[in-house]
Length: 165
Image (cartoon, rainbow, N blue to C red; front, side, top):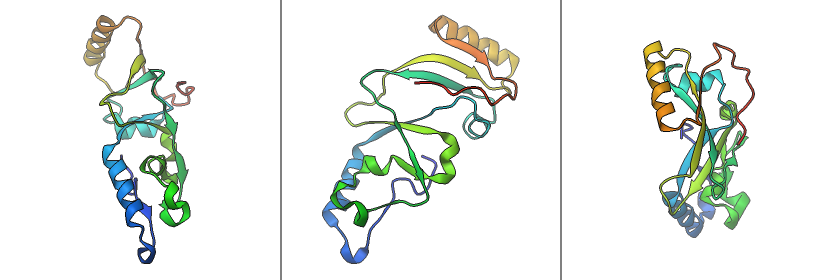
C-alpha cells in the first residue's frame, strides 16, 4: 500500500473505544490484500509501478470465489465515532485518499489463504523494454500458456479502454 494514511482511522482519545480498536487491529493483522487496477493504460501507473515503462501490466480474471472491491476515494479517514461498532479493518481498507483516484484500484481480501485465484488473460509489455527482453518474454509466455495474449504497449497511446473483470 502506497498511501501512508491507509488503514488509519480517527478516534476521540477522550472516548477511546478499546474493544473496537483491538478488534480492528486483530482483523487488520489477519487480512491479506491483493491490490489491482481497473486499467492497463494509465501513464502514471506505468511510470510508478512498471519500472518506468520497462515492466509489464497483467490483465487477469479472478476465479469466481474471489471478489474485487472498488476503493472509495475521499479526503478523510474513517472515524470510530462516526461508525461506532460497524467500523471494520476491511471497511477501512476499502478507502483511500482522493489523490490516488487515478489508480482506479480494486482490492481482493483473504484471510484463510495465501493466494488469490486468477487466470491471466493478457500481458502488456512496457514501451521501454529492450527488444531482446520482449522477444524472450513473448517466447516464455507462449510456452507457459498459448491462450495468454501478449502485446506491446500502445506506443504512448494511453487512452485505450479499461480492462474488464
